[in-house]
Image 1: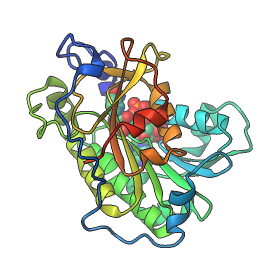
Image 2 (image 1 turned 45 degrees about the horizontal axis):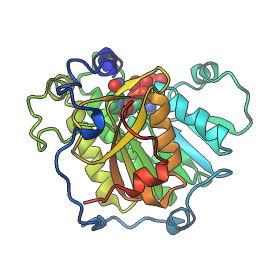
Image 3 (image 1 turned 30 degrees about the vertical axis):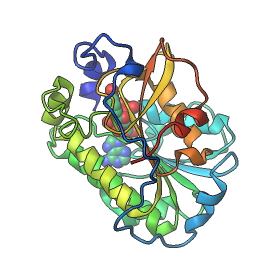
Image 4 (image 1 turned 60 degrees about the vertical axis):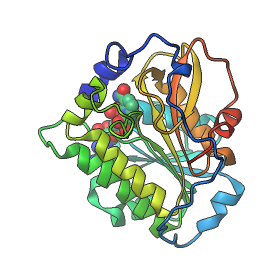
Length: 294
Ligand SMILES: NC(=O)c1ccc[n+]([C@@H]2O[C@H](COP(=O)([O-])OP(=O)(O)OC[C@H]3O[C@@H](n4cnc5c(N)ncnc54)[C@H](OP(=O)(O)O)[C@@H]3O)[C@@H](O)[C@H]2O)c1
């Protein structure tokens, strides 16, 4: 994914196909208010309903996959700042320790490669994690299947591990345009470009579909192009398959992912987010509440 950063960080020309403000860039969407019910849901084992009913808030432990990534690191930092304990799932524990300079006792590192199967992941998620946030993304390599292995199978493995451990709260950082083909964006340069690299958007959509059928209480966050700079606009949140351009600060993506843990309005929802200086500042609760899941 690192190779794609310049493309996605700079929305132009790929992520900006219109001069309208980002918050007005969407297609029509369902406003039926009907809540999504997984058609073939897999029964969760263990402590299934607890986290769903009480929400997951400060003091609880959150497993973060992809904790060393640019977004994952921000998620970890925001979780710690809000009083959560964090189990950071990383591929290289020693390297990860140098990424996080603070010696916060609430931060624990565990080795977790999402491609190594759900049993190993279940082992490290353990019986003390209340929720999982997945911020993984394939790293550029000679392995053309890496996007498929990480962004699809890896995420599926994490969900399976949650099922084995009875963890019933899952937040996924995905991407806008994952369903670009169905949105009529087949020729959108961003859609074409990203899929040239191992069908990464298709891989992410497959994983999303698995999550939605799994029965787990999910929030799928689909950001636009990610930026490392501080937020320069307010968060715009739209329903699935509506945004096809725009960008957002990784800090804001982390804010949405961490905020979702405590907000029942975010349960079983897919949301798309970008930032716009023209958008009004709205609390996360209100933003999530405005999304009526199909
Ligand atoms: N870049 C964009 O503009 C953009 C736009 C929309 C959505 N997204 C999505 O947003 C998410 C976060 O993006 P980002 O750019 O912040 O991520 P990133 O900096 O590229 O970090 C990716 C993370 O995934 C981890 N990872 C890779 N392969 C793994 C594996 N097999 N097992 C466990 N962890 C693995 C990496 O670990 P190591 O540190 O060990 O490599 C790293 O922590 C990704 O899903 C990305 O696709 C990105």
